[in-house]
Length: 211
Length: 211
DNA sequence: TAGATTGTTAATCGATTAACAATC
DNA sequence: TAGATTGTTAATCGATTAACAATC
Image (cartoon, rainbow over all chains, first blue to last red; front, side, top):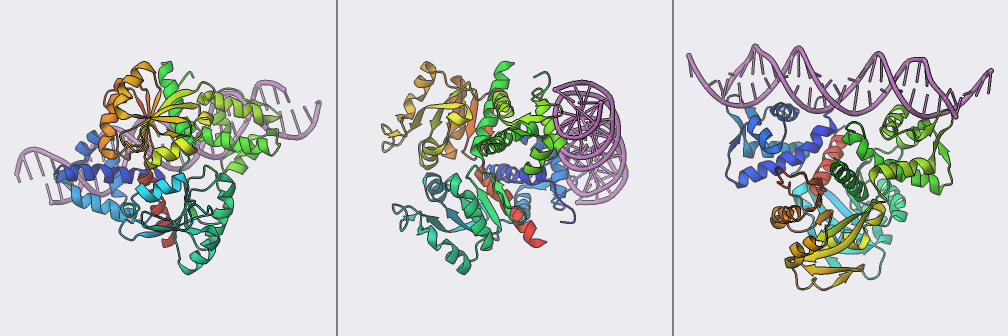
């Protein structure tokens, strides 16, 4: 990682992995940038540029070994050295993530969940114990955690972000829909703003129909 | 809409709305591109360029009226003429969306949900009736729907996308994690690939720590 | 009118695409 | 060796930033 790799490149990497997994599953062993581009709707140039940010995965005159390329990208993303994660807010959405989301496949390990509702505290969801939010600070102090998944009400978002950051959490997966104000800190925030996504869909849908 | 507006601009619009709502709530009535930029971490230039894609919301020497600008952007996004939506797959995630997501605020109206599980079919979630998936095709034929929200297992994703597209659905909000293969159709697909999001977070987190 | 701030044109920067020499 | 395809440099394209005249 000599220089800064653009966010566009990084955000394409998961898609490469997904597509390569599909090829692997279909028994394909090698692929050229040209073919891969055709399948994924990208130019061969772009693919070669993207991949060369991370090193020479390919072989001239041959192409890329599917398995090897997949593993190379996975390594670049850091899958393999899992990050410790906790879910904060075990309501509907938190529940859905705890139950369905494959943390392990994304290089993370879910360790605990927190909530305030007596209905939820004490329960176990998919093997994860739901603790009371009042224990959060003590927990983070004793068990260093890398990522906090925020799935709590908007009104609590900023306070929770502040608390976890103070307790050493380095990344926030933010489902609250609020733009967190963590000025000054070097915490990495990944926003999943579902409203933004729906609004964008709506825009293109209407733009399309207008044609 | 004389020319094609870049996706970058479109994806910033929801954020403008969110921030302007905050200002409104705080009683702020006017804002200049300079101030707004400082608050949102954008350049004043970019803000003026963005806004001018949609028309002269501002007034020279004064700035932008917060309320008016907010409404202008909302209009550009088409909030106000709601799109009809159905949720397909009423499991954990579908449930969470039906219960928590504010469709109305995003210019959509949720009309129905579909599932195959006998535990879920017949139930009502947040006022939305869960119907059996076998009724989906007939339903869409009788009740034209704009958007299908796909929250079903990956194995069903492609078939569901094909069916709804065939029945006139113009937009898909895709939570399945699969890259849908809707070759040829002009359906708009908005992907919410949570794994991609988590992987990206992991990348930046580790890149940060490495420094 | 003078000051502020927009709308818009021009300059810069970065990302994508094209081209091609290196090499398997 | 000849053919294919990479890694990498150069050209193009688009997006962001800067500048400034228009105007409230």
